[in-house]
Image (cartoon, rainbow, N blue to C red):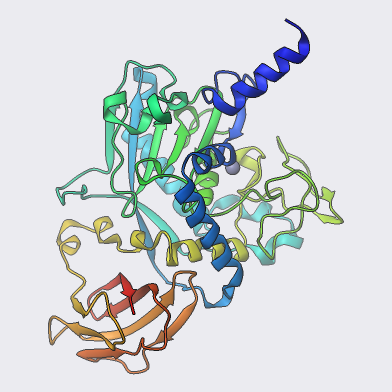
Length: 413
Ligand SMILES: [Zn+2]
């Protein structure tokens, strides 16, 4: 056995083998590797992802929908090998609180952002809650606890590359409808911090965020004790790239206009300023690799990218009535939409209740671009012209006096 053979074998292991077995050093995030694996295994996903990225490039950022209150229903799956991994409800709630602070720019350490970058700080308008309804509509805590006899279950794959943690028959926990819930898995990932799937990079059964139990919520880890491994991974889930892009050179970036080009990741807690690619680096961004205490902001450009993911591929998450208390959770959208699929239209939206009038509607293309919106308020019935539009899926947002809802419309010729 010579060195060349060993290196070749090691590369093969990294390409085709288990996730972490051959990687000893601590890795903050393996999202890119996991997404690439998944896309290579699923050509149809790869095609969808390609179309989405193209549409995103063609769409105008300014047309992306901004809403005051986006509340994402979360289910936390704790898959535990021992009691240490079976983290408490309080620990889980501390992570939800952390997400809510970080995504609304209400985190106390925001003052540490250098003056140069303060104008870039964004409140994304995205908030999170533990879902109080399960997929069958039954009351739930939003926390699912599953014991497993497999150590490091988060690093294991079964036959066909199915990742154990997502499947009951592989001693994991079945995902809740990933179009309607943000599924966060907490389990033993060995030395890996976590990973997540961006839109169209994982099959629905595995479309989730996975976090090492050691770093979830407020904990006593010296580097990753503030719950920001999860903030970072949820950023990936809403289509954010690492701040330096996917390659460590200046030719590649994160496709976000307001983040400076950066050579590669920063680690630990560097002092400002640090420069690469001809400008000062935004290493205190959640999408870098610095310690939890040294990352503290998203930018306006990142916010738009996340909202575009929420306007289109992840639009079902906007129907977040399962976040509210059970009474309001039972509220229907309050409208009837017909016909759907629709040919040349118009598409009709009708209120189900004369006391719950339609206040506004907005029709979006799947790339998040606004196509048309209502001009009159408080109507019982609205007709939306769609004859001029090409055959495709569209996303319709409707606001009535009592509720808001999001609907997928199919235009077919
Ligand atoms: Zn990452």
